[in-house]
Length: 198
Ligand SMILES: C[S@@+](CC[C@H](N)C(=O)[O-])C[C@H]1O[C@@H](n2cnc3c(N)ncnc32)[C@H](O)[C@@H]1O
Figure (cartoon, protein in one colour):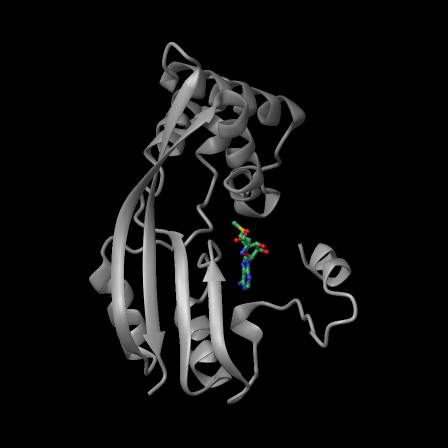
């Protein structure tokens, strides 16, 4: 994404940096921070505190990200099938979820307030979109798979057999969720939050 952004903004005075939110050491540098679908920090409080420090007075942060443990009922249902399938259940029992989710908008509000922010609004909405089976699998593969099939999230070795069985089971689950047109209604619980450094 950053490589593409650099190509597209050639000639403009924009600086790009890639680093963990937990490692940011900016101080009073920015007017706006926008975090889209990337609130899965290992240490969320540290990340939010670093964002607070990085903003100038009256600077704002906007967050849109999956929320709640059941962040996407479609994906969670597919994963339950992985959890119980004979081909995958042993290895999956060693999976440790890397994501950070809170259950309510109030809990997200409290986290930001604890870090000094004045929260303008915080809400969780269920957003439903319709997709072909191919699209759903692509959404799953470009996002959730980064965790579910990440060796760092397992304390046993991921084998090729496990990875291919995992993908097969998930595809089957999405097929079961599709209607007669082959369309899946994909539901995501999403956090929308805006906060100000006042
Ligand atoms: C689902 S992608 C969203 C990417 C992009 N913001 C978008 O809207 O398409 C999640 C992103 O969060 C990044 N990420 C994961 N952990 C992070 C951390 N601790 N600090 C900053 N970014 C992180 C990942 O590298 C990945 O690019």
